[in-house]
Length: 261
Image 1 (spheres, rainbow, N blue to C red):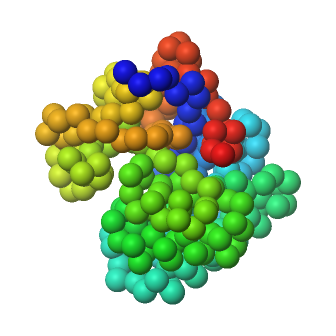
Image 2 (cartoon, rainbow, N blue to C red):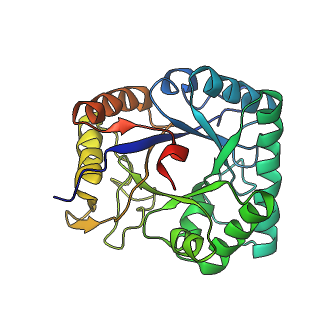
């Protein structure tokens, strides 16, 4: 077993309701996390929801970050759309700016950026996409933290370009043997059992490893933050017992900015 991490950030993708459609229980989940990735209107979210979610984060002492995705409301940003690096760069800047406008009026600082869905998964292996995302963040504000999949191109290139980063792991998503997230189209890709999720999270924090969908153990390396998906039907229960368990084993739940150097 490696040396205990000591502290970890718990993040959740929130603010993904829009219009008449409510996608998650943001008010309840917010009580148990330390960082919120807020949808910026492309894959989900709308101006009313964005501002409401920012306010909820402030009320619960939760750090806020932008969760920019592809312009795909119908597919919830989980379908890859052929897009140029220039377009991605501008999509990212546009969405960060939208969220920061509400952060400004609510007098809170925007601290991180986590790409959403297909954009996040594509950037894990596609250097051009990863560079476009990183370039956009550095152009907008080089002090922002990029959240990316551990051992991915996003993390690798962030190091090269001297951009602060938070390596992310998922307790409620299945991994393949390469350390990539299994497609949601496949059975078992999304884990919903709270006890199983907590067990995986503890293993990630304590050993820096996770079990793949095929039962193999793989190393994830450094981990700064663990994601719990807000659209998981049992998200509130999962976030609550996960936080409780981590504290019980001596892990402090901290804001991302307190963990990342």
